[in-house]
Each structure stands twice: as structure tokens, then as C-alpha cells.
Length: 252
Length: 185
Image (tube, rainbow over all chains, first blue to last red):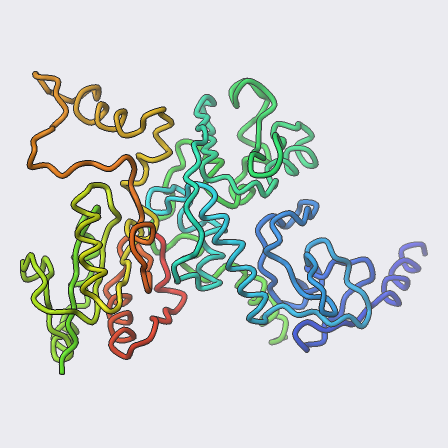
């Protein structure tokens, strides 16, 4: 009986809004990103991932809600709002954000184990970043932590998305990772002298493939497991799984 | 009137030039529209005339690279950085930051010529023949040295990428590469 009322409640809480002029149905309390995902509309994102609380820090998912910029992963959807997602202005914001991430760290795709399954790289491909950027390469000196027998941390590639932090805190209940410092000096630190002195384990969600969007958290012994041509984003652009899900639903 | 094309490999591995030849028989089509000026493909070392298009592979790791790149900028209407080394330094740029040393250049040379376990170097010298170009303090990208008009990513860019780039450049536009041809590795 209780579940029936709840379902009825949810049914009556449907909201309707527009993304780039296309009508999208969502539930009250859903974020714009969740409603868009269900409708098969992909909004680019880096720090947000299925299964973790959204944090809204990378700003790649920035959309315009009634003309004002907002992070789609944290902004609740509301009835009647007009969302812009695919305009040239927003595309250029996103390109600049991705470029700045590339210029801020040491992202050497040709030598990186994560190349081909890296979400930062895939996002650059999807956004079609080709032209020379106006930013300098900062080439920071950042440490590599190879102390753990099974896991390598190469912080040259860290984009501070906080996905490992949230996975460790919310899912593993361990707090192995955490933010240290502020501003440009902000980095991800570990709860111990180095990774070997923490209680991190290979089965943790925080170090699972797909938690780190780049090649910062590397599982030793797994290097280059997929050959070129068969890697995740060789098969299709990032986000095509969300867009394809809608195609499948449309055929039914 | 044929367009003049010059190419050069600076701090690169010649992989991009090899990949340029991967456009296979299409190079015959290209030669109907293009005449090579200085390029490693014909082994000319100096510019004969002003060029329409210059393709640069690799960044700058020594003095000679900088001079060559500046000469290319002077002699080419459109200068294109080809491949990851030219765009962001590529593998040579690892010596800038990833070495984690106070003096990355010294550590790089000492590791290469003195300290590596497989090195046999009886005199324990780092090569310093006057004929060798002076090594720069760090590796610079092409865009840090001169103005670059376009960049084509890839390590190396594929033959198809080169073909589409050349077609676009001959039309006087930027290459609009499809998803499958934008690669950073």
C-alpha cells in the first residue's frame, strides 16, 4: 500500500522542461544531468560518474538554465526551465576547461597507460580540440607514488575530479584519498605516509577501473590491457552509450 | 601554379614523416598540386623559394631546432605543427618536469651517459663535441618559439589525417577532422 502511494506521488511529481528545445520529462528532485541521461541526451562531464554523489567541481557539464550558467550535475531540474547544452558558446567554454586541464598537468598521451580509455582525452576528442591553445604548458613537478605493490599513483595526470575521494569515503568507507591544499596547489593526498601505508585494497571502488577518469591511479600488472583500436574510446565517442540507450528505447 | 611545401623534423622521431608517406598512392595526387621545397623526403637542406605551407614535426630541444623553426616561420605563409612533440613536447618534454630533479637537464644527461646500469662509458664524459648543437635548458613546444597557425594532433597522425590536412590546407582552410582521426597517441 505504502509503495503504491509513493509511486503515485512520483507519478504526480513529473516535471517537463526543455534541453536545446527538445522536451524532456523528469522527476522532481532530479538533477538536470540525470534527467538528460534518462532522455538519452549527453551532457559532457568529468567529475561526475554513475554511482557517486555529484560534486560539481570540473564545470565541464556547465549548461545555461534560463540564460544563466549552472553545473548540470548538481542543478536540480525544475518544471518549465529552458536548458542550453549544445550551443557554440557552451562548447567553447567546455573546450577551454579541457584545454586548461591539459595545460595544467603533465598529460603525455603517447606514453600514458590510460590513453584510449582516458575520459579527459576522450572529452577532448569529442569536443574536437584541434587548434593551438593560447595557454602555456605549466609542466608542474608532481610526485609519483609507486610504494604500493598493486597500485601506482602518477599525480602528473591528476585532474582533481575527486572521484577517488568520494568513492573511498562513500562506498569503501575508508577515506584513503582526500584533498590537500588550495587553489592551484590543491592536490589529492593519501591517508598515510604513502599509498603502501594506507589500508587501500585492490577491491576498493576508489581504485577500480573507471573511477579515475585519467591515468593517475594505475593498477600494476594490467598495463596496456586493451590493444590500440579496441580501447574504450576507439569504439566510439565518450557519452555514446547514453545516446545509444535512447536509440534502443526509441525502437521499442 | 603549384603550392610549395616544406617539411622538417626537429626534436621528433621522424614517425610523422613516415606517417606522411602512409597516404600511399594519394601522394601522386598531392604531387600534382604541390611541389616540395626543403624536406627530408628530397634531402634539400635549404629553402629555395618562399613556401606556402610548412609542416613541422617535433619540438625544440636544442639551439639548432630553434634556428630551423625560426627560418621556417620566416619562409612559410602557413606553419603547421604536426604531432604531439611539436604541439606539447611529446616524449622529449618528459625531461622538463617528470624527472623531478633540481637540474633536470643534468640528471637527464647523467642518466643517459653515466649512471644507467647498461651504460659503458670509460671516460665518463657527457658528449660535448663542438659540432653538437647546444642543448636547451628544457624542451620547448613550437608555439612557445614562433607563431603556429594550425596543429594536427597524433603520435603520429595517420596517413588519412595527413591527407585530409593537406586537402584542407590546399583549399586554404583548417582541417576539420572527424572523430576517428583526432588522436593524441
